[in-house]
Image 1: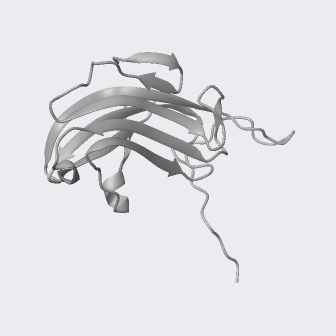
Image 2 (image 1 turned 90 degrees about the vertical axis):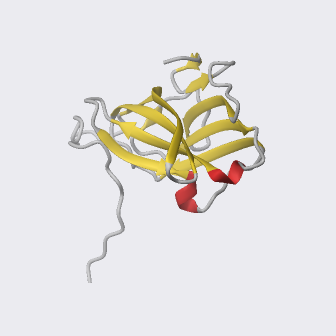
Image 3 (image 1 turned 60 degrees about the horizontal axis):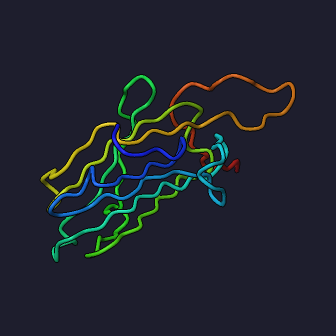
Length: 161
């Protein structure tokens, strides 16, 4: 992984990813309302941030997609701002994606970035450009103290009627 890591959850790029079309500045992850210096636990909402400058006038033709892998290298899921209807603009773009409370399970996660043009051509790919760790959250005494199976553990709305 290239770039300067200030801490476990923030990576700053100088000129490593300065291309004709874009310049990638920074990727970071933090618990919502907390700094990147604080640990992330399994029960918190998580903010995933990307700072990128788009140099061309056709910025809306590009989008950023990430694939998250688990500790064993298994691709878990893909996410992109384009799926939420957010378009890039020429100049600096500070993208933020919020993962719901409790979404990621305990463990390490590895992010691969893709810059896609016209929703069909990957003009840039960097495998494992960023990693993050989610730790165990506070648990009641006498409760389960181990890691639950799976990589994600979403909190769904349940009803009993």
